[in-house]
Length: 94
Image (tube, rainbow, N blue to C red; front, side):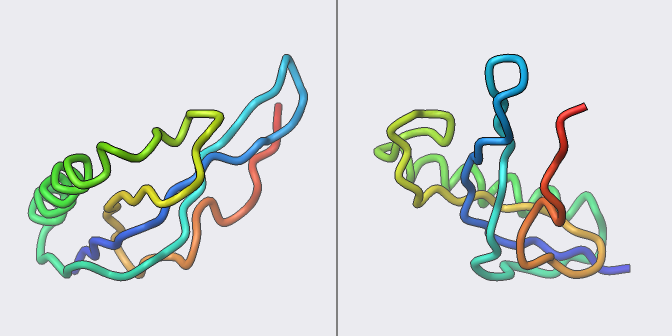
């Protein structure tokens, strides 16, 4: 089995007004980064990419900031193919 590491532009979206309001994280695929033969190798690649991204993006506001304007990226690991966006369906408040 192969594992894919993909780069996503991340954001936080308003989920609804229940209990004072809630938010959820989203991501839009920007590009696949690497294929790895094992999960451990893929996680190591993603961790290295995220450390580099943290250094490169330190001047950008965090995703949970009210003034966030986009432009932050994160690497994620998947077992089959990288989805075009996550989550696949809008979460519902329970």
